[in-house]
Length: 520
Image (tube, rainbow, N blue to C red; front, side, top):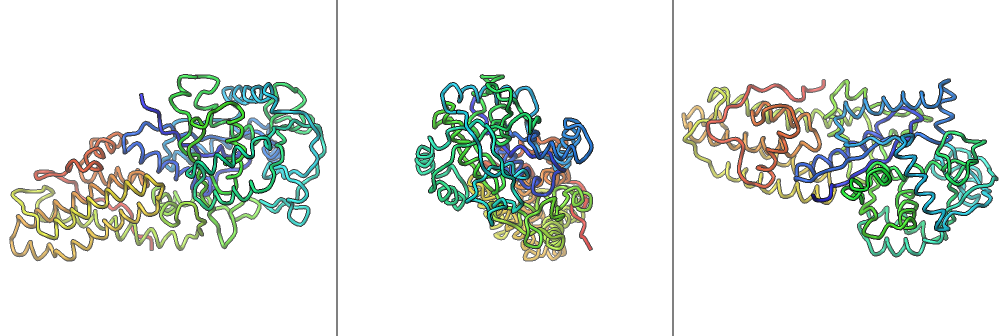
């Protein structure tokens, strides 16, 4: 059995409900996962929640709830949203699960016995919202966290440290010899800039007397594990590092870790060093760490404290999950920041989804029913214009695969929409109403068959981005038996490999049902 394609989101912090930033990461990973499945790959898509740390403990106290009860309530909100968005994850890891706790303690024991963890005194500044340690020289204005700009607190206490500095030169060599490890390239340059300065050893513990909500360090009952070390290890706990060696061998290493740009350093610096120190060889390290940008409103990053959070549930209720998925994937190039506004959302919805895609399906099915009672008849002939559109279709399939293989999601969507627009233009240029008036049924039938074959291709190509819409289109085209993903996967083997068509002469289609009613 070949290795599964292993893709991960970060584990999300459960101090508050999920927002559109979390959704964006999920949708990216779901899009990539669905594409890989279309191409015949076995996929292991991992997501989950980060449930330890001072921030979670404080949030539970502020809510007047017992910590585990508070966490359980928030986890339900994450899972409910992922279901509404059609996120096809294969495993959901929680850092309070026994399989994860066992892995964290096993990893720490490996590093401790190797001599890479030592006891010392931590003296420095701690940002609770970011769960990050800083030195005085790193603070903004001498007091504030350089990431979130909020005040830090000075701490001096007995702690355990991981010898991060010991592996700095190794990491530099690894990054330089593996150009695809950090993506996009400008994020790699940021990490290399960070590594131009000496690394401090990493404080990996918090005292139990100050923070009880965490995983106990196996060689010190007085301490719990620093939440970021705890969180990163989910990527090996879920595939079975301590619980299922055979499964772990089948899944690990990760093909791609996807996260927002503000946590790239943890994934591109701490994580590979931890794995290397644990004894993972270079062939066993994650293949790619990909940092996407932020969604901002009025030029500011969304955050609960600023009160500018966009609730995805509101958009799903008003406009549908697939329209939100499309907007987030289409509006910006993966890796860059994007501005979220309802006006730009509605423009994209009405223009791309209602006018272009929805209109193409609706007018084509309407014509098939008007001229041929819903059934493509033969004999038929294809005009030069029909053949040109079919050539465009084949070119689109190849460009789509190439862009998706290089994670250029935005350009893949542009290619699909170029085909949709070409099909709409084909209708105007061919003037089927004139062909019908002339009584040339063979030419009219060939014209409609060409449009239907174009649309069946679009139905497959949009599946990674808008799975529900893809299945709605396939149902109206009468090219699948039910609403299951496996039907689309079966169709894709014919379409994406250009082995032929699902729709042929004699095929019957259903009457159209609008996909995206215009927003007034």
